Image 1 (tube, rainbow, N blue to C red):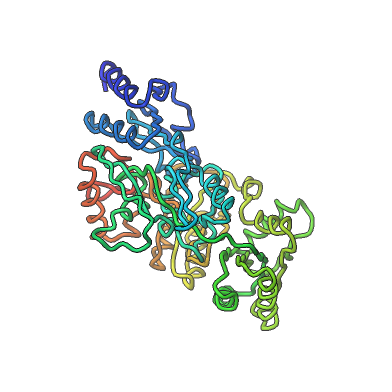
Image 2: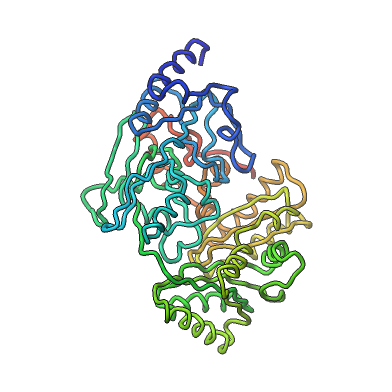
Length: 476
């Protein structure tokens, strides 16, 4: 874009959102140009901060007329480069669109703007004795629009589902600036195509989410948390199934940790003190149940675990007796920075598969790593209740060649068990070259058809999610 065209576009954008909300070139702060992992960076021409859906539409119309790419910038908590703007394009931040428009206690819904921080929405719901069930480690910075765009999951998918299951109504701006809005509170609506589901999980490549109606749940008044140890993977699945039944549907989280993960993370938390459970078991599971029976839920939880201990399915267990102890158990799973520090630089992955295929996946991944690098260090953990595993891998150094090799080790292992290369963090830039290991040629052709139909000029977050060519090269 020429300097004259740049000046004209800046003036046009300023006329829509106000001059103080348009930043050009090198004046754009780094956080809008570099992703969380520091692996992806760009040089957008403009940063624009609209305050309303109408302003978003106006910005997109300007961009469409100039064939200029637009990428929505959220909390930048993704790991695949999905929210890194295109060089010379527009970085669209919705941080000014951060209002909770309404909480309807009767309908148990929340209408919220896309720039609202997830934790803010959670706390607003809880203040009204309601719950927005989606919960993840980046709750303090992730924005609602971002978690919709990536169909985020988190720790409670087992009971309440992904973000897709919480979105009832949606408003979005399409690639030509058209606003489509269905901010309904209806749970059941089969009148025509359910277009919102095309946009949920599309990483801003088909439309820009501006507002949403989210489904809320009654706020649980009891919470039971325990750390369990198991001798084999079959026992892990048996425990998951048993608790799903004996807790009468109250099981909300089931986070499985392989021993090497538990050893590393618990050591960083206790600083040489006693771990909640000793080392020596292949698997550890953090389980949590939520309910509303102040008198009966604790007893039911304790009976369920006592039965599993008596049967030998659970080898050892500790139940949190206070909120402080509960937090200490969760810190082993969520407060990972200190535990991961010695592994830097590393690659991290989130993949999914059938629950019973997890041991085969881990074995295949470990073998692939060993075949490529004898000094590899890899740890595994994840939301096993919904088939989502994470891996963190290092060999003590990192460059593009090492990263590509490690990627192939993981994705080939996932492919070998008919799994997915992305469970909840999306495709973005980092996984685009590998998407054909998860999606068939026919599925990819359909994705390209949808992209071209809704965004024929490819201005919405180009280069992410779907490759518009017949295929894309990847390391062999």
